[in-house]
Length: 139
Ligand SMILES: [Zn+2]
Ligand SMILES: [Zn+2]
Ligand SMILES: [Zn+2]
View 1 (cartoon, rainbow, N blue to C red):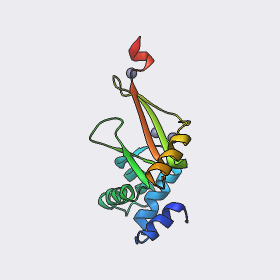
View 2: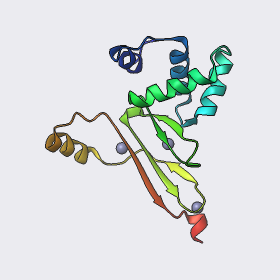
View 3: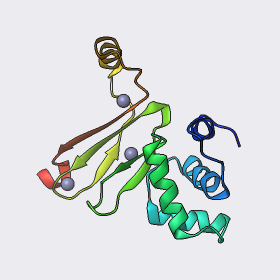
View 4: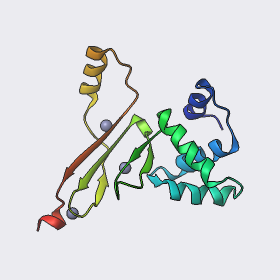
């Protein structure tokens, strides 16, 4: 398996262990947010020998390397992890019932270009969350 993510691990000096590759495979196949518990469950379906601690450590490592971002949708205690496909990810979240929706088009291309220019950053992605009251809670 070779992806930009395995390249990122190698460049940062990390070996492609079975645990790291399996967590990556699960995240790539799911293409949605998964909590660490859900990642663990799916990893264990592929390889039961990979333990909880190494799955959690791998998620921490992936967070540090910018391969995933933790998001706190359902509770502040259990983050879910998203891979930044196409380098961005967006939610709109109801602050009353905690329902959330993903949306694709953020229209932030101009801002991204402007930030790169003015702050001299090579931007690799963003995570965007809107908060509000959904129609069901509003009526
Ligand atoms: Zn709501
Ligand atoms: Zn999402
Ligand atoms: Zn975006």
